[in-house]
Image 1 (cartoon, helix red, strand yellow):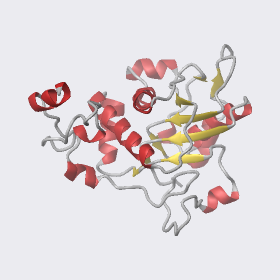
Image 2 (cartoon, helix red, strand yellow):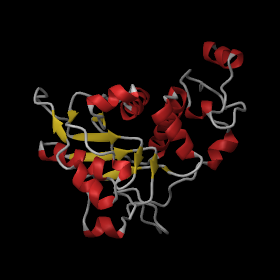
Image 3 (cartoon, helix red, strand yellow):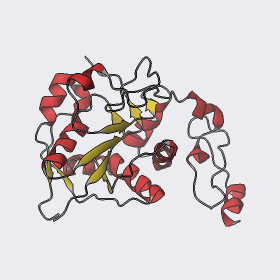
Image 4 (cartoon, helix red, strand yellow):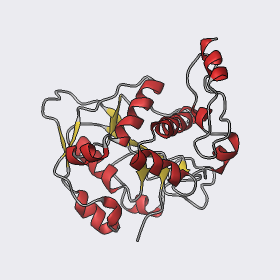
Length: 248
């Protein structure tokens, strides 16, 4: 009743068009992903389906195989087992991600995390990870930006899905060139060796989900997964809001 009263007094507003959003809370009083985006704008978000089961790259057709992989993954499988990337990184989602990441719009961030969660909850027989780990930013870059967008997404997902959040496992070394400025080959070389594990962590979870905002080539997530697997993690999945086409 309190949640419905709050929604009535302070109705959600769509982060894209400014019109009324959808119901802010469900019958259990929990915030819903659709609160801060209207139905029309949500329908404008381009679904990434069918997509490669491992890397999330868009596929032309999946047939009846929900675990179909792209040619690249069949030839050279990535370190991670599965990628959830429910949308394509194009308008209007690219505008939302940029508003969250570079302008600090936390309302957009909460909405994006809710959309990821909604898609995870739709997965049939999905393996639930033992922990959620955000891709870390180097300290200097996080101080410059003021926050780590992956950590905020991961925190909302951990709370919404009731899965432990482990921000203390993965560490980031000295800053490198921004990945966005590089082609696929240079990205892979640039990110090599950038991650490490906190030596104070005695036991690692068996199955983890790495969280980031957008996957482009997958180099960053692959390098993080490689380190985790080398140190004893058995399975790594990747959760992102969107998949961009592979550059170059």
